[in-house]
Amino acid sequence: MVRGLHYSLLICFLLLGACASGMKNQMKTYRDAFAMGEYEKAQAVLDESVLKDEKKSVLLWHLEKGTLALRRQQIDESINHFQKSLALIDELFTKRLSAKAASLLINDTADVFYGASYERSYAHYFLSKALYARFQKTGNKLDLQGARGTILAWDTYFTELQRSSTYKTLYHTDLMLKVFGGEIHEVSDIQGDKQIALQLYKDALQILDREGGLFSHFNSKHNEYTQDAVARLKDGRAPTDKFYERTPAYEDLKNFIQFKILALTKDVRGYEFTSLVKSMKPSESVLKKVNEGQPNVVIVVEEGLIPPKVGKQFNFGLKGAADQVKDPGARRFIMSVGSAVLAEFAMNQLGMVPTGGTSPGSFIFGYEATKLAVSEAAIEFELPMIETVPPVQRLELFILNDKGVVVKRGPLPVVSENGDIAKIVLEEDVVARYVRTGTRVAVKHILAILTAYGIYSKLKTESEDFLAKTAAMATYVGASKGIAAMEKADTRHWTTLPQAIRVGEWKLPPGRYKAALGLYTGTKAPDAPAKILGDFTVNQSGKAIHTFPYMDL
Image 1 (cartoon, rainbow, N blue to C red):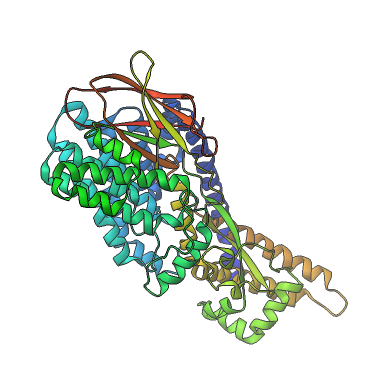
Image 2 (image 1 turned 60 degrees about the horizontal axis):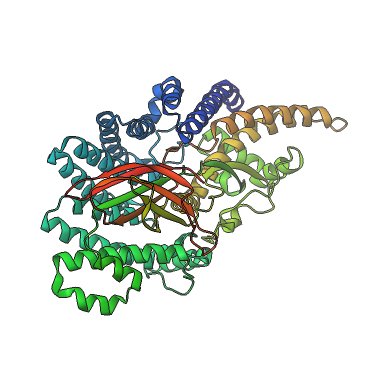
C-alpha cells in the first residue's frame, strides 16, 4: 500500500514542481522588466503568466497588479487591486492562517499564498499612497479620508498580528507606518490631524531608538543586538542600547524625525517648543531647518526591489519523526522492525546522512533546534529565506529649479529597509516552522524508506546483497524525487516591493523643480547630483507628497 501511494503521487508531484518552476521563471522576467522601467513589457508578462489563473495565489496576483498599475499611473485600477488585497488579507489572516499553523500535513507550495507579515503590512502603505494619488488628481477629499483611514487600518493590523501570532515577533510595528502616516495626516491641513501626526512622529523616534538596532543600515552591531533582543523578547523585556552602534544613516533619520517633531510642535503646540528643544537637544542643522518655516514638499523615494526569497536546505533527523507516522500498517511495520534498524538501513544502504545544510542554530536568533539535525540518518528539506540583502547606500537629495540651479540639498534618510525586515521575519518563521515542516517531510521519507526496506528484505540473500540494495535504492530515489518536488520551499513573494523607502521634506516657493540624487563617499557628501529622479511642481498653497522610483546609481 505504501509503495503504491508513492508511485501514484510521483507524477502529480513532478507536475506540481514543473508548474512552480514555470511561475518562478515568469516572475523573474516580470521583475526584471519592472526594474528596468519597462512597464508595458512587465504588464504583458504578468498577464500571460500562470499567476493569473493560479487560484492559490490570488493575493499575490492583486499585490503585483496593484503595484504595476500604480507605476503606470492607472490609479483607479491600483486602488481596486489593493482594496481586494486587504480584503483577502483580512479573510486569510483571521480565518485560515492560524489553522494552517496548527496543521502538520499542509505543505507551503500546495497551499494558499498568505503573504509574509511584512507583505501584508505594506499592502496598507500602497493603498494609502494610491488613494492619496487620486486625491492629488481629482481633489476629492473622500480619497484623502480613505488614505487616512488606511493608515489607521495599518496600525490595527499590527495590533492583530501581535494578538494572533503563534510566536512573539520582532516585527510588531513599522517606522514607515508612523512616518508616512504622519505625512498623510499632515496634508489634510486639519488641526486635529496635525496633532495625530505629531504623536506618530514621536512614536517613530521611539521605534528608531528601540527597534532600529535590528537593522544593519542603522546599527553596525545588528547581529549582536538581535540576539540580545530575542533573548529579552522571551522574557518580556525591552531591547537595550548595549549593542546599538549607531551609523550615519541612523543620525540622518533621527535628525529628520526630530525636525518633524519640532516643526509640528512649533505649529500646533508653540508653548511646548522651547522646553522640547532643551530636552531633545537637536543639531544646529535641524534647528536651522525648523526656523525656515513649515515645509510644503515631501519627497518619497522607493528604492530598488526587495531581495527574492530562495529555498534554503535544512537537515532533520529521522528517529524522532518515526513516532509521528499515523498510517496503522506503517506503524505496525516500524514497530516490528524498529526505528533504530530503519535508521541504520537509511544510513548504510540508502546513504541518508546529514549534508551540512543550514540549521536554525546558525541563525542570529540562536535557537536550540540543532539537536534534531545530528549525525544520525537525516533528510533534507527546504524553507524560504532571504540569503543576502544588498547594502543600501547613503544618499543626498538635490532639488534643482527650472534653470537647473540647486536650491536645496540634504541627506535623504531611509525610513524602511524592507530587505532587512524581510530577512528577520523569514528567519523567525524558519525557527517557528523548522520542527513542524521537518517532521512532515520526514514522515513522507519514512514511508518511502519502509517501501524500500520491504523490497530489500525480500531480495536480499546470504550471497547477494547488491541487487537488493540497488532495487531498494531505486525505489527510494523515485519516491524521494516526488517528495522533493512537492516539498520545495514556497518562494512566492511580492517581488516588486521596494527594498527601501526614503522620505525627506523641504520648504520651497511655487514653481517647477527637479529631484536628483548623489551618492556619499564614506561620510563625504557628493559635490553634485548624479541622477535625476523626475520633475515636480510646487503650488501656491498646501503641502504635497511626491513619489519617485529609483534604481542604483
